[in-house]
Length: 91
Image 1: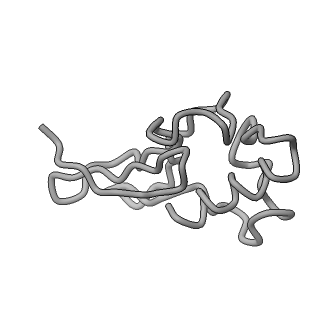
Image 2: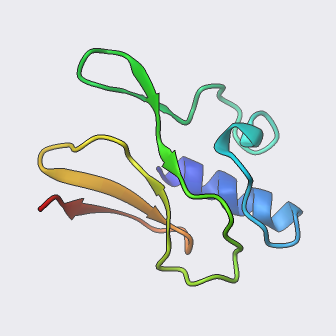
Image 3: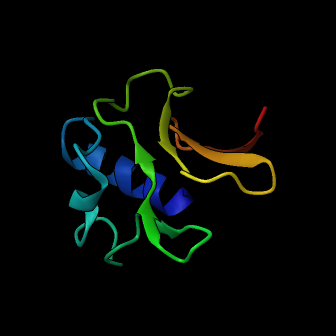
């Protein structure tokens, strides 16, 4: 998650503060591993993280930019526009 957030922030620094339209566009200029935005589900299939496009680095840093698509130990991992990533309990 932190790698994705750093890649988004690096992209924004190069594009007048606008976060990327999709995570795939970060490869290879801002993240060097192809498929970095995919995680494995319970069956072993690769699924993409949830990305909320349309934000700028000047927007509220508490806006959710990236979400892990799966619940892990009754928690979800969220990445915020301000660059922080946290685990939050699933209700």
